[in-house]
Length: 81
Image (cartoon, rainbow, N blue to C red; front, top):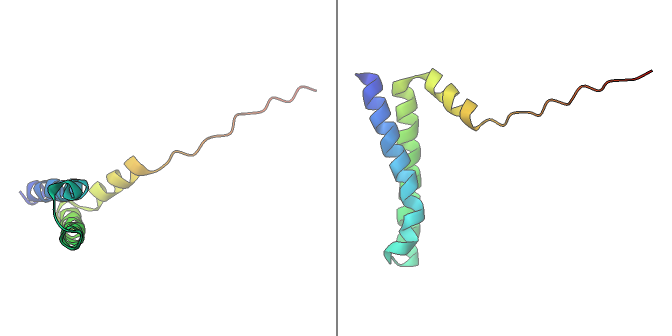
């Protein structure tokens, strides 16, 4: 049950982050848009970390591995003598 709530909160976190690029098109003044964007960033971070706390550390590791760059393995060099 706790993990389900964690996944729901994670989904809310993603929605908050996805709302940020929409703010400029809603016709708010610059000051209001900056305030709303700041609020969305703060709320998105809080809900993200709360979801990680509820779901568990292994979920955070999965997320990190998704975004980690894969290092290029240098090709083996055949030396002909």
